[in-house]
Structure formats: structure tokens, C-alpha cells
Image 1 (cartoon, one colour):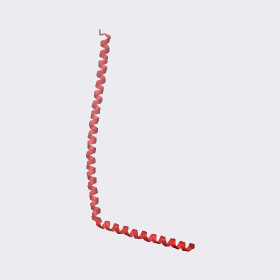
Image 2: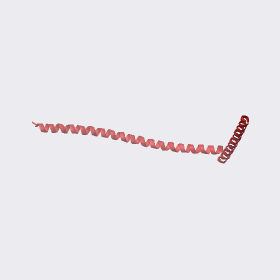
Image 3: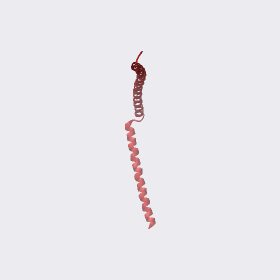
Image 4: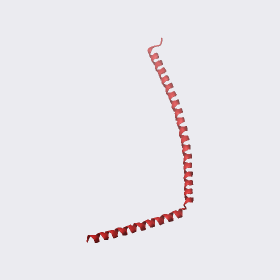
Length: 109
């Protein structure tokens, strides 16, 4: 007959082995999940790089189309001309304001 100490030791050994088996199984499944995640992340990085290249190419095409539609020099010249015209209009409005102020002062007297 086995004594009580041997039975307890055998029982503890069986429990320890069962726990180790369970932990090993969990570790293996977690490792598989990590590998799956790494694969997914790698695929996402590749897809992002492709999208980035496509976006850069599309942006370059749009810029070249805009450049060909309105040459930059002509656009800047027209913009400067519009700004000058706007300043002239603003100056004229200030002159009108001064004239109105003068007329109001005359009517007050």
C-alpha cells in the first residue's frame, strides 16, 4: 500500500502536469493568433504602401493637369491683376466714405 505522502505527491504531480499541458495548449493557440496578426499587419502595411504610391501618383497627375489647364505664370499674373483692381476699388470706396463724411459735416452746419 502507498502511504499518504506518495499519494499526495502523485496527485500534485498529476495536477501540475495537467496545468502545464493546459498552459502549453494556450501558449500554442496564442502563438498561432500572434502569427495570424503579424501576417495581417504585414498585409496591411503592403496595402498602405500601395495606396500611398497610388495617392502620390494621382496627386501628381492632378497637379500636371491643372498646370496644363492654366499655366502658373498666367494664373499668378491674373491673380496679381485682380488684387490690384481690388485695391483700387477699396481706395475708391474710402474716397466715397470721405466725401460722405464731408457732406454730413456740411449739412450739420
